[in-house]
Length: 115
Length: 112
Image (cartoon, rainbow over all chains, first blue to last red; front, side, top):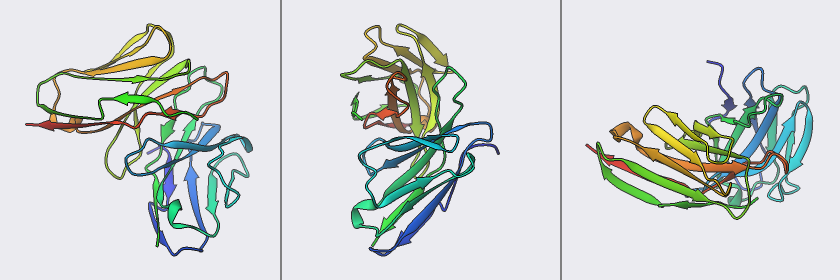
């Protein structure tokens, strides 16, 4: 299967711990996006990369959050000193920048629960 | 980003009925996307729209890009039980960036 993959699918952590999530985009896609989704809401944009460059960050991305895409392939999203309010589904999506079409394809998500 | 107004919030219909839902924005978009999400999974892309007035079909699904560029509509014909899920609209204006703005979703329940 060549879709977007995310790891882990579920993460339970205690408040104050650091967590890191990984996303592997569709292989030929050079844009990668992170979104967060809470219960009863649509996904909310966090940040996106084109190749290894982080081009846009939302105000939702506090200084406890950091995302990287060091080689322009997979990406990691780290949350430091987690808070209960960080509990959410973290979604990764990818798209092909050279295309004039802006279709973003999502992975299955990582469900984070902060106790 | 802004949150789009999506309606209805939920629908409870019988198998075989047609379904209509819509999405409005206060901003102009040049891309409208419609997704379906099952519990515990990521959104799956259903239809993409790129031109004002465009009407696009994908099987029993038909979506339209509103002529004002501030709204979009999704219709599902002859619903079946596997249509159950949450449908999200999403819009973006690539002249402003590539962050998708989502609605809150329409929850669809279909009874056999």
